[in-house]
Structure formats: structure tokens, C-alpha cells
Length: 164
Image (cartoon, rainbow, N blue to C red; front, side, top):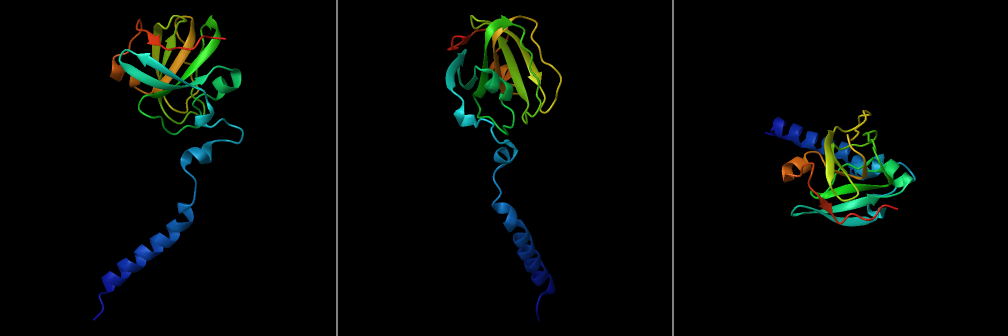
């Protein structure tokens, strides 16, 4: 006698596999959401920064198009990876999270490398995140990174490239 439950289960598995096959060839989420003309993460210049004993691999956004894109469309960051925004003027530079798919922490930094402010930013929001102090740099890391490493205002980030 044939076990009807066994045949049903085998048929269901075959159906699930058949339905899933067309989706197996789809590109990863990051590639799906990256619009034409957007810079790929590997295309940004890189800088090795230090915050206390921690080494940061930072993509550098030092011109208007790169600063405008920032970490938009990215779906993940490596554990000590971030993005350094470099500005040509000492001012209050505000940020938002439109089209940014991952929650981030941001440190606002003076020309001498001193962290002035740190803020937490939720993904895909449009509220402004502005420092209370003027600065030349901003460093975005995964949300909670600065707190988890004990990095606070008053500490220094080293290895910063010179503003243009």
C-alpha cells in the first residue's frame, strides 16, 4: 500500500522547488535597489581611520555627487566599515536618511579630528540630523557602533584626509 502522506509531502516539495527556481537567479538586494548611474561601494576612495584602538575602513565622499549618494541603497556594512564625508568648509552640515536602507550612527568631527556630536539615525527617514557645532567631517557607521566602542564627543579620530 502507498503512503498517501509521503506522496503528498514529496509533491509539495517539488512544487516549492519549481516555484522558487525562477527567483534563484535574481541579483542580491543591493544590486536590485542601486539605480543606474549610482556609484558602487567599491568605487569610492578609501581611508583607514583610527578611533582609539579601532581601525575603520571608510569610503570617502569628498565631492557633491558622492556626498549626495553617501550610503544610500546599501544593504549592509562590514563590522568596522563606514563612510567619511569631507567638506570644504567649517560649518553645520546636516544629514538625512532618504533611500538609506540601514540604520546608522553619525559622528560630526572638527578639522582637528575631535568628535563634537554623535547621533543615531533610523533607516529611510527624512528628518534632519544636525550637529550643535561646526565641523569639517562626518563619519557614518552602523547604528550603535560608536556607543559599543566607547567613542564619545571629545575623542579624536585620526587619519582624516585634508579637506579640499
